[in-house]
Amino acid sequence: MSEPAPAPKKQVFCCCCIPREREEPEAVATALNSTEAAPAVAKVPFSADLPADLSIGKAICVTGTVLPKCSRFAVNLTCGRSPNSDVAFHLNPRLLQRYVVRNTRLNGHWGIEEKTSTVKFPFSRTNTNFLLSILVCEKEFLVSVDGIHVCSYAFRVPWEKITRIEVQGEVDVVNVEYKSLEKYPEIGKHTPEARIVEGSKENTDSGLKTGMALLRALQDTPVTFLLLEGFQRNCQLEIYGRVKILPHSFYVNLQGGSQRWPRPKIPLHLNPRFGLDSGEPLFVRNAWIDNGWGQEERTPGFQFKPGSPFIMAIRRESDHFSVWIDGKLAGEFKFRGGVDDIDTIYIEGDVVIFDVCMTKDSDKKAPLAVVA
Image (cartoon, rainbow, N blue to C red):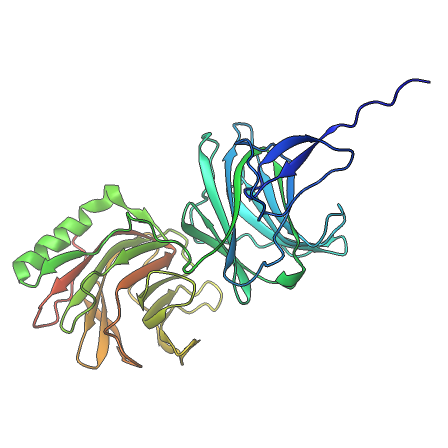
């Protein structure tokens, strides 16, 4: 009788979920809070247990490399080790279609896919590393790639049931971390600052020309600008941008804090909606105060046009903000709380941004119009 074949080598995962070889008759995958050393790359399919203390404010961070022939890959947060276990969160970047699918599988059945995003597709087959972070929040997952928020996904399964992570597809897993975040996304050292322009007409005209000259430096949203001197009374914040060809909506937040989570105080939220659903364009204004949105203020119609450049000027008055679009007053918004802690402008949606600047000590309204 022949001798039994030796047991195959199995993978064991350390604190970073990186595999090492181990001679064992049964497969073992330790939780992410182990401290054992390991090599630098794990091949897929890849799986590992999540720590038992998965909770709100904890993030699962996957560093990986998209391989040259990759057409799609998936990161799954599952509710067990079985191949038939429920998949609480299925994140599926598809490189050929250039969108990220989100879904859930319950009792063997997939739900309705979510695909929409206002963010440029973040993955490419350039053989460079990406950092994918999935943050557990109160009601949803927040997903960022390389520090940029990409999408959110409302829970369809309680996060308490999630026990495991899987990675499938043509990618290499370099590292997987599990850590607490104080803020999301983690703003980097190179976050731009709004330019400061003194308030004379000559300098304002110069700022206009500079902003419109930055067409080569346009930025896809979401984009964050820091207001290092805050937003003082009688100052004017100017945003130079262009609406995309087929817009749905975009928004501009003046907020206290650069993070998306925990939700910062937002004294002014401006949300142009182009009416693809309702048929009527609306300019919506609101504020996030005391952990909730207030009553929306809506104005039918606005000056924004698909595919066209615009200049939005926001002026801080004594008790309200005034908002000007291409030299015309678009609306006013009374303060609903303190505004002295505004230090960030956050823009997301169907626009590209050329420039943001702050005009200081302007003693009169100085509406700006796009110069052809």
